[in-house]
Image (cartoon, rainbow, N blue to C red):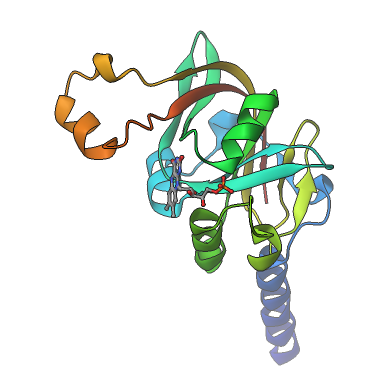
Amino acid sequence: MNKLFIFIALLGLVSCTSENKKATTMNDYQQIDIRALRDNPVKLISDDWMLITSGDSACFNTMTASWGGIGNLWNKPVAFIFVRPQRFTFEFTERNDYFTLSFFDESYREALNICGTKSGRDTDKVKEAGLTPLYTPNSVAFGEARIIIECRKIYGDFLNPAAFADTAIAEKIYPKADFHKMYVGEIVNVWRR
Ligand SMILES: Cc1cc2nc3c(=O)[nH]c(=O)nc-3n(C[C@H](O)[C@H](O)[C@H](O)COP(=O)(O)O)c2cc1C
């Protein structure tokens, strides 16, 4: 009986540790339908934050984001993101047809802080953050992520200052008139660990 208890406890320990282990290939992930995502998308994006990554194995960049959404548009499951034009990541979202959204557990908060305060223009922030690039079929994500969403860019445009119904938002958020570009991406792949 005692031996059985120790065995079960060890099994629990092993499965706990392996959950936090980083993935080294996409095979370490389970591909799921977006509708099977149990996480609340508002919490995922606004509280947990995400990394928006765009590029390929030769050249990519990533940045932290907490504005955006996941939903349904033009009868497609979509994610929409907002990228200011001065971000280095902007050059990548402009040039590439795909981007990924990577979501992490709380232990990666500092990594997300680094990727949200430093620019890939002047630092190797991925290395500094201790993240491991992982190549998805069409883009790049990170092996430490617990959820990865891969999107195909289907629409993009800058927010229009004249279109703000609530002009106070435009004044408060964009004193330098650096309006975000909104990209809508069709969700083409979702992976979970
Ligand atoms: C919590 C958090 C959320 C952020 N959300 C966004 C966002 O939604 N859009 C954006 O353009 N920048 C956002 N940023 C700022 C960028 O992540 C930051 O400027 C980053 O250093 C840009 O890196 P890059 O120049 O390598 O692209 C956020 C930063 C943090 C810390």
